[in-house]
Amino acid sequence: MRVCILADNQYITSEGIRSVLKKQGIDIFLRARTIKELQEKLRDSPTAIVVLDYTLFDFASMQQMLIVKAAAVESSWLLFSNELGEVFLRHVVLSDPTLSVVMKTDPKEELDAAVERLILDAPFLSESVEHILDGDTPPADDEPVKLTASEKLILHEIAKGKTTKEIAYEKNLSFHTVNSHRKNIFRKLGVNSLHEAIRYAIRAGIFDIAEYYI
Image (cartoon, rainbow, N blue to C red; front, side, top):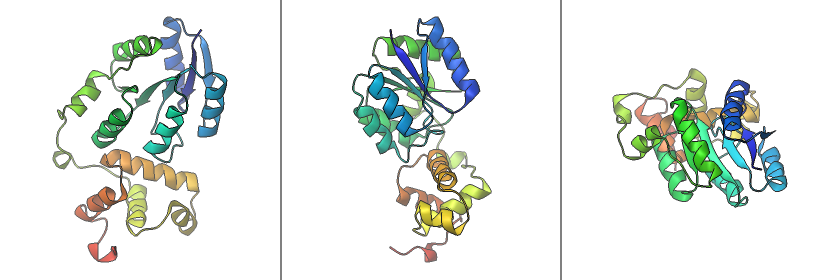
């Protein structure tokens, strides 16, 4: 019988996923709150179905997530998040076509269909994800990205070349808090590199080009 590993740190979301999966005959659930826990549970259950909210989990980058998944070749993964940028989606789907992706804002039927495919070890992309990949979403400039004051501050420090540890120390924040802000910034901007984030910061007036030295 297939095991499901819930790598989603939102309790209510996890319970909703349980309900959907139980209707598909899956009733063994494991929780993974960190990368280490996820890797340990994958070693014990190599054929597990992994339901992951990338934006809430503690992966430092997309590459780190892909490395963990690549090490568990028999597992099936569903990315189930609120927001995933176009650049991120294109990169991740191209890097690993076996990944399934459904947005938390999608209809329940999309999640049902994804689970059915996962049980068969077949990938699934929801209709909204397909639209994003097809370029059917409005251009970013038409809908300005909304960053919080804290995210703008962190982006400014990142653009100055400071590491996550340096920012955490100087701003009296935890490493996890700064890292979470960094991931949220990249997700909201739909970028996957520091240079792309800096370009946005300059265009948005968050960062002065005179402060940036290459």
